[in-house]
Length: 327
Image (cartoon, rainbow, N blue to C red):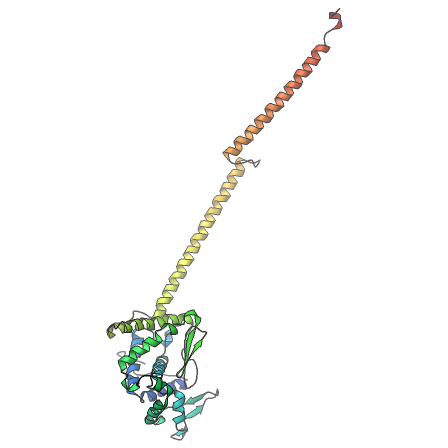
């Protein structure tokens, strides 16, 4: 929701109390380390500028982006896993169960305020964490270095979904999936918080890849945060629509050309049938050969008739001499 001048002042959730719990969850974890708040704001601002932070338009929700930030900070030893936090949660706050069971059987952890977590205990958990021991000293990590790491990870080919292999993140656990997209699961409900197709993710990931190239090339922050004119999904939709129109036009032209060719063939065939009803050859050479054969046959027949007439004449002449003339 925005005020009269367009400044965001909050979200409205209707019949979706899980979204409220998610918001409190993000707010509560943000108390664990100030770098999370700063990094989260910068990443969200970047996503808004690049037009990929509009869940209603098919891009990423703010909760998805924050879970990505959580994952990065967990792998860098800044935040513990959610499972570790659950072990330290009080069972009740203000007379209410921290773990609530929904009508559908889903268990929801209600993190309503700072009392829900023990920040000192988080530090202890991090010192015990195998992730922390294998990562760099998290206390020396600046917001700037974490900003770079965020895009190095999520802008990599590993997260692109190429070859149909995507990535699923559950708490700080990373695994492959066959959906060809990033699947971010809520650590509270384990639900996929941002379902999308592989095509949609590929277009969204192009923005992460762009930012990755720029941070590695040490481009100025202003360039990285440069506002996009429109969402990559809208660009892809427009290009796909243009491709469909071009393909449809090409198919129409090919059909018309085929029909014109078939029509011309029919006209030629009709013309030939009118000129040569006996079905004789239409070629000039064919006509010449046929005429020559006909002339030769006529000549041969004439010669044979003439010979027979000659023989008959000779026979007829001998028999007709009167005997009286010999006398």
